[in-house]
Every structure is written in structure tokens, then in C-alpha cells.
Image (cartoon, rainbow, N blue to C red):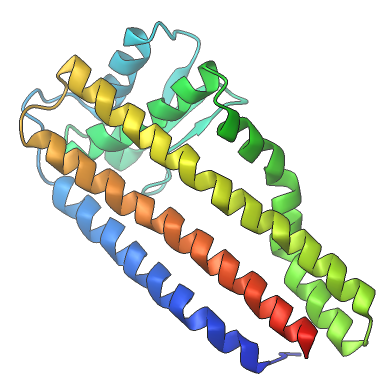
Length: 224
């Protein structure tokens, strides 16, 4: 049964921002995915060059299916690059590969925010899946304790998304710095890499804002 409450309207700005951010990353990625770098290094080669520069030899670089599914898996010690990044020599491929290596460097240096985010993953998953449901159920059954549990669980989601922001911004900063140090991109090519990473950053900002608005919406439901 669908439950509608007027407070759902507060989510509209977050939804609009998320739609805009997704359009930004898609358009920016597609633009720079069509521009080859002057050195012609593929995403795989960029990642391996960065890891070698940092003396990191126990992390694999491997392809993964999908589009923009690139990520670093610290448990498997693996940088996984999507097919459009792994074998591509585009500016977008260099930027994304370098960003994921930024996460590797964070992991190796014990970057505190990355460790906190990893610790929040289990409870954030629970909060995202069950927090709103518990609030609605608590309202339906007039059980304040259930509502409060749902809100507390969803607060972990907020914490996860907020802590994600410095993690992602720092990884991009590290990526741009080391790409410049190694001369992987030349001249204005660095501007293209920065544009790709900035567009990606907006998706994290939009997701965090939407989560905050969700919490506000849940609190408004509890108040009524």
C-alpha cells in the first residue's frame, strides 16, 4: 500500500538536482570520452603507471562490466575499470582511472575518512533499506518507538553520504596532482580531466543533499 504524506514535496529539489547531476556527468563523460590524449595511454596503462609511481605492486588493475562502474575494491586489492575506461586512451579514461588510483593511495596511507566510510557501509545499507519503511510502519501502527528507530537508522545513511564527499574530493585532488606529475596529460588536457572529475563530484553532492532532504521529510512525518 502506497502511503503519501505532504512532506514528500520537500524531496523535489533533491530529485531535480540529482537529475541535473546525472545529466552533467553523462554529457561531460561522453564529450571527453571522444577526445584522445596526446600520449595515447589507456585507462589501464594510466592506472598501472600511477600505482608504479607510488610503489604499489599488490593491487590489480582489471576490467569490469557496465558503464561508469569503475571502483576500487580494497578487500580484493583491485582497481576495476569499466570497458569504456580500461582500454580507452581518452581524456575521460585517464581521469577516471587516476581517480580510482587516488582511492588506492588513500587506502595505503590509512586515510581516516575512507576508513570511517567503510565502517558505515553495513549500517547505512540497513538504514537505506529499512529506515523509511519503519517510519511509515510506525505511523501506520501509531508506534513512536518504531518511528524513532527508523529515523536513527536513516541518520547513518546521512553520515555515509556526508563522509563520502571528502573521500571523493580528496581522491580527485590526488588524481589530478599525480597525473600532472607524471605528464600523463598535456596542457589543456588537464582541464578536460578536471571537468570530468568535477561533474562526477556533483553526483555525490546531489546524493548527499537528497539524503538530507529524506531525513527532513521523515522528521516532518514524525511531527505530524
